[in-house]
Amino acid sequence: MDRDEIRRRVKETVARVTELDPASIADDASFVEQLGLDSLALIEIAVHVDHAWQLKLTDDEMKGMGTVDGAVELVVRKMAEKGASAPRA
Image (cartoon, rainbow, N blue to C red; front, side, top):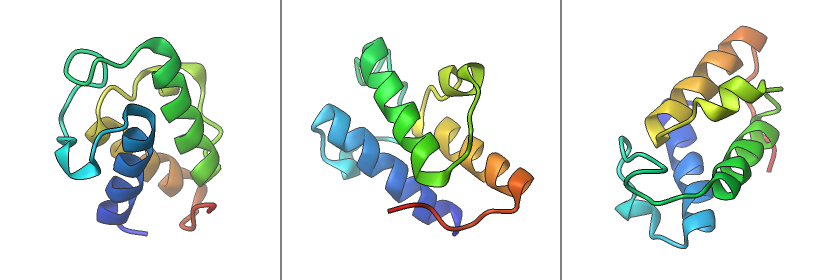
């Protein structure tokens, strides 16, 4: 799975939580400052990303996903560490 596909899926997750159009979510938009997400929404996004790619993220890693780009980089790094490529549906 390439970065573009990961980015698309992360944006879809953010869009479900925020009810925004995925195309309107900038890759570098801050989840808190620019999208106005609260801690519950951040947890929902982090848990979905963790579950979708079976990453076994730590709490600190989940807290570090502050943007779409941050989430994509984390998924790419964790997938490389475990040699995985296919997300769960």
